[in-house]
Length: 399
Image 1 (cartoon, rainbow, N blue to C red):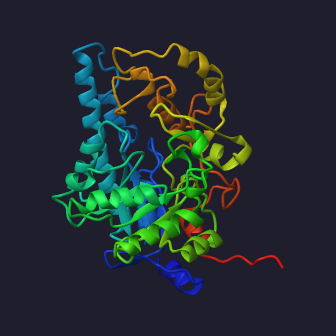
Image 2: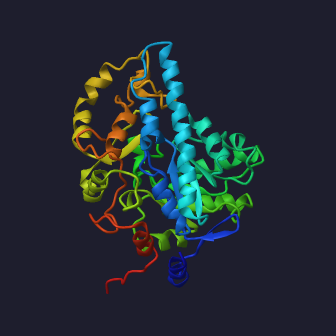
Image 3: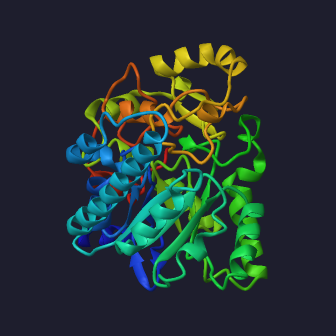
């Protein structure tokens, strides 16, 4: 840790300060299902940065919890009992992962939980994480206007929404002000560059210039300055960050730090299978595809065999979309699901099943979310420390 902080001091970059604690200006993004669990988050925090556990379906890292929730009966009323059993197993897994990450971090850095606003267990996941002593709650995939209410009994926990433009920043801050709570930081995620679910209404909006860091960061800061909040709410730029120069550029625009997902996903400490890491590390930008997720949001992933076949079949699947009597996985992981609820224009597949296949390295069946841009070490799988050192080291510029 000391060597990385020394590297930061000589780099010219500014540290990220949250609640009076100075850290590396690097946040590891939350990635589900199970891609960022305790091993990755704890390793990042141990180096005095922000490590993030994704809350989604963490039972998949715990064989006993999988055994408990395997072969559950289907059909009402058993479906409700199965859903409750799975949800409770995931909350128990969340507690375990937070404890394990805390032990691994040695009390250094900060530990965050990332919860998608679009998941049905958003509220219980936030509550259980707070009860388990998580340092920060990060929420994306929807506006978390109710997060201050969920965290009202935990005033010391950091609350961090993920937004994509200045309009979203202004709306959320004004709503939260009425609840007597402000964001402790805001992640500004560029939907044209990030992986997974993206912060735009539809695929056609991904290239809207309002999302460019050169527009979104200064505009967000202008609003915060006008509200007298510029010094109270640091901005964290996310999407396409790969090297020192990217951090220097967004800090020059006024951001305090950066958030990265894909480069951390492929580290040695990443919680996914080696084949998952290989697929992401070897993928090029031309291998990426944007599509509408089953959550109704634009998403970006590697065009693996399953995804190519699904996109070919999507028009036919959309044409016969209809409300299902129950979730095919007895899980109801999303508050609104294109497959279960028969929503035309939304994805028509089970996202939990496909993401779990990716976690386990099943290249034929998995959905592999990835951000754009070549990775810092190409197709090499390196350590979290190596990645941090790379990000903090200026590289010689060509003449």
